[in-house]
Amino acid sequence: MKTAVVTGATSGIGLAVCAELAALGFAVVGVGQSEERCASAASGLAAAYPDVPILFFRADLSRQAEVARVGGEIREYLEDRRFGRLEALINNAGCVRGRYTTTEDGYETVFAVNHLAGFMLSGMLMPCLISAKGRILMTSSGSHKGTRPRWSDMMLKRGYNPLFAYKQSKLCNLLFAYGLNERFGKLGISAYGIDPGLVKTDIGFKNAGGIVALVWKLRHRRGVPPELPAKIYARVCLEAEAPKGLYYGMSGEEKYSRQVNKRNADRLWELSERLCGMKLGADEK
Image (cartoon, rainbow, N blue to C red; front, side, top):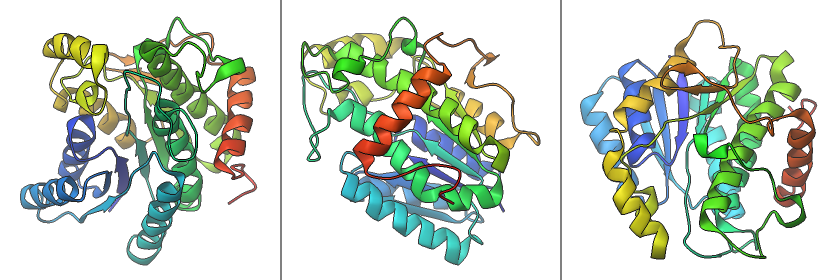
């Protein structure tokens, strides 16, 4: 039985992906921020798929100490119960903020949750991914297009714009996938950015506030149910041969920004290693 780890798994796209993969016979490990919502999601999935192992871990992925803790706990579980193998890691957890905020580590919140948490968790689970020649999926967005990393101010301390913060983080998701393929492709790892499109979720209401919540209230009504984009993730995870593209949406492989290139990917990788205090290279198995 294959195993998938999904972050942001207690609602929206993450929960729908858990259900889709459980229905296809994956053992599912979910990560969520709320103990209550983790318990609710786990019990609901277990009732719907009684023959599939379901386990949820609680963690605040904005805090690097929490990412390290939950990464260690998940790895221990995989080694004890899943033969040290992980076929799919879905870095789906994400947030938006209506104003400039920082985490306890001092990093801009959207960048920390949407990118750094996935970078760090991927590094911690890499031995299990390598054992299974696993696939790493990042929830990106078409909004990554038309922007570029603000290398001189990645934490956006000057002139914070909520939309730019989100767009930059989604570009980072694709750059991370690019960097993973460059460094770990020869070891059987495949990484992807997934564009779920406009989805009816509550991301724009969670601690966002202000204009962000208002805009999301108007926009999300036109979104599709999360069960539809969940099928994109399932297709990428299930294909017998790892898909060769980098960026996938409802219509299959899609074009991505020219900003997704080796130069930017390498620069982001080096910055992420420094901010996370960890080395993530093919020799760090």
